[in-house]
Length: 297
Image 1 (spheres, rainbow, N blue to C red):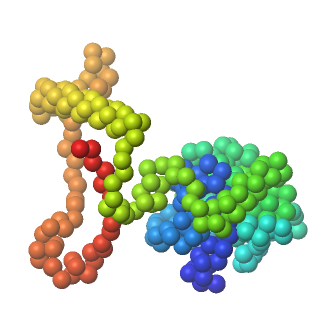
Image 2 (cartoon, rainbow, N blue to C red):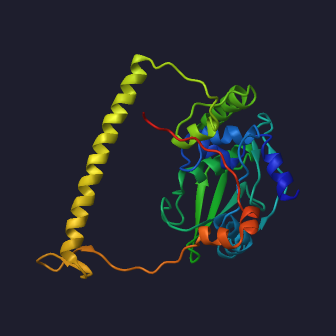
Image 3 (cartoon, one colour):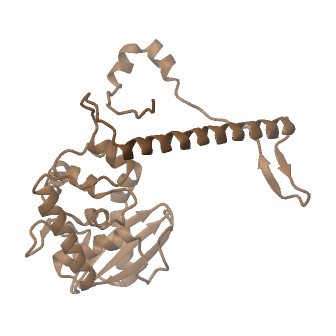
């Protein structure tokens, strides 16, 4: 399959990269994100540097894993399906030949949430991912090979946990049958969820309940406090900078740096000037979008 066909096939069920979001351990995705993706309502995800280099380095990481462990690995280009729960899908990075194990390949910018190599201390979303794959394939363990910051290589081994897998199946089954199949969106959990769930307003008005009015008044009071704090911060920053004048740093009596005020060189794209000089070209690269703005009156 090409990438478009592969993405379409993924929408027919729940994959390993969805498991962490449904279990609430993915920092970047929520159940609503997964729902919108599966029902064809999510915007197309644009390729980024992390995604590109993750794919580009996959073969290299797999080679290094085989070299360091002595295990043989092979691709499986099929989308695998759970024998009982047909909505559970798996797209493996590699199979480990001759063993009841699978290999998941990762690249990471930082070592956050990664333990010592040789342990099972991987980020929770990756733990959910490989546990999902073990549920689908029947594998007894998963090795996670990661290249961190382009120079630190490690292998982590996660053993099958049937209790966690049973819980995962229940969560995924509930999500698929009661949300995706019935077209009932899960409750929003983040501000981004709210924006994605209701992208466009209908022009109507809702009558405020007593509780809603209280929430609005509380929010208004908090914003007034925030405004006052911001004004105090600006006044203090002004006083500090005025005292520094053209000095670069402030030091305490022991020579410890308390603050700095240094010049930095930066470049920015002058979109206004570009549009003035190349209006037609600017129009070709201008994308319209719709967003909602929340204002307290």
